Length: 124
Image (tube, rainbow, N blue to C red; front, side):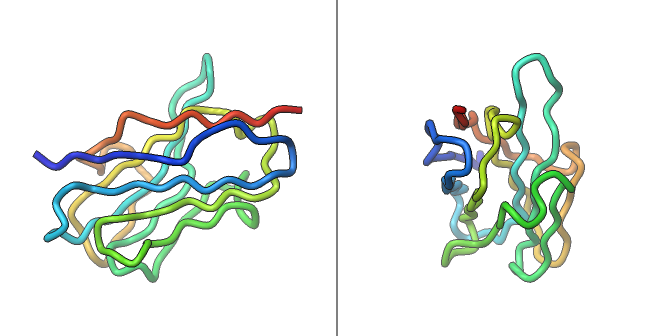
């Protein structure tokens, strides 16, 4: 069973930056990966996705120009660089992974493997 683990969450002030990372346990597989987030009282929503090849990315409109998703030197890792953070970015961020190379997915149902989540809090 593939396990997914996030790291790097924390507390940051408005306008600050934070990077969160994620790794899938089976390094022999190439994964399409994504970040989703869930704020208190809200449903989990899509944030960003990248294909296994690392050359195709998607973002939700609210984070375009502020967040960047990229592969970290390995087929099984992904990071999300978050800049100009706002209070509305406060949420638990979940990493998702699915075996794949050319395609990236924005739908939660496309991902088989999920992490436990990492808290990101933006204080004003």
